[in-house]
Length: 451
Image 1 (tube, rainbow, N blue to C red):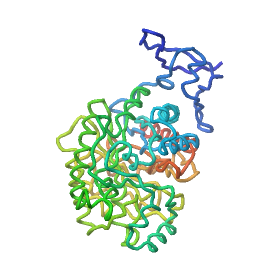
Image 2: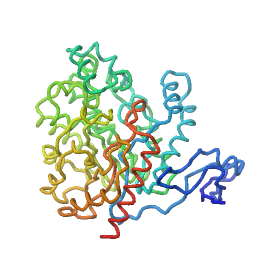
Image 3: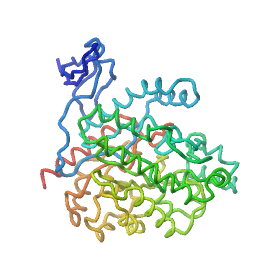
Image 4: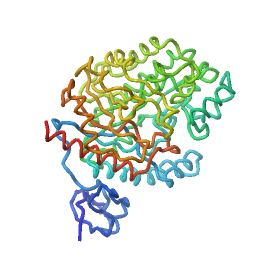
């Protein structure tokens, strides 16, 4: 009988001792296979097999070496199962408590971690499965912000008819995508932070290196400031940005103290700054406010990022930039290479650029040649929105092209974006996501042998 090695923590009175035990395969722990992925049924497995024992993490594997070449990671989000989305809505409607929701969500996080570990991911996230989406979740952690559907914001849009047409053309479900809008002074709710509870749970259930994605200061400022709703508390975006930066700095320092390895700031709306026209600007990541000249916007984004991380070391900082991840229809998403953005991105005091590069919309890889080794590259090598499983050899070939002008120790491998950016608009299934990660990990193994 195949067995899995689990870490469990005793729940017996007066005991806090950790121990190892083997659980029969019939309880759901099996060796992974790229055709069907791992099976996982949550903490009840250990409870069934060992009475009062609680699962701490999945199948044990050694943590990633700090010097490992081509580390594999994820951008953040994992597909939410229907039962979790249902629980999320009940919590938002006040039908269940936060504690009740967390008990449900814990199993979804454990499943996400196990999928990543079994696929060979070196730096894992909690899948962001507790979040409504990658930036709107802050409404539950901060006071002064209200979660509003795009459909609710229609009354405040100057050109309502034009905005509705943009949503239709861009395949955007206004009922499903929400934005955090500042309606009062934005402050923290106690000492819980924005993501500290997520990190604490993740850290206690994996031995791998950890990554926490956070909404970037530019994205959070731009999406939260809305004329007619925010200007009473914050006359300008710059006024809101001051509070946003201070909140994020405090979060970063707390994550560093807890031992987080990688903090990723999501700034996808930067692509809209350079690729979107004056009409398209009204949706990209719900950045609904009027934009200024692109060069002014980029300077603003660089300044906010550098103020957020100023003087903080001992943790890897990354910035994720893509061209939209709300639809599987590639023709409704933005396109254009990173060339216009790179001079500004190189001015950000961060270590890594986590980029979308597996789709033709991202342009050619040669645009990075001019900026050789100035930043680490989190190279997107799998499209999260397709059912096609990327061939490991094809991934290897793509990385080899980058190796012509980039050093191996500067290259990380990841999908283009998350697999479940929006809770009700996930772009793939856990099974497909697992297979894509497995292919990336196999490609990394090949590249390591060649290096």
